[in-house]
Length: 175
Image 1 (tube, rainbow, N blue to C red):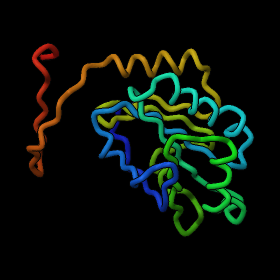
Image 2 (image 1 turned 90 degrees about the horizontal axis):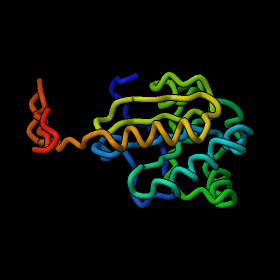
Image 3 (image 1 turned 135 degrees about the vertical axis):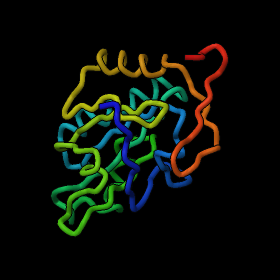
């Protein structure tokens, strides 16, 4: 962990006015819940936990879902997903992972996920900090999120060259 998080590759978004990108969320802590709607662990544990994160942390944490289908492609269409999200009252934005010619989801592959559910935490600088395959206990997850939220906020200058980007810290956080 602690490496740059790859950009998401999506074909469609639900519960969002505009498509989401990881780059647009720089400066915020992100929880990425990767799931399949026909995965019992996702339905019973992963998605409800992601919804609890949304409610517990409010605007302090950005919760995003990624529907990454690697099996039963014909059954898990965008139309079926839209009904599923409504039925299960999922309120956070959900992207549909694009798959390659072999049917493997590209975002899932880029993040080296083993399956679903997978929960990934990305820090304010866009780095992968934690990733859990399967269920993670609420207390452990809450502590991990709180620790990332407590880290200093850096303000990012828009002055980047091909080689470097300048980062400036607020005075009270100088390294």
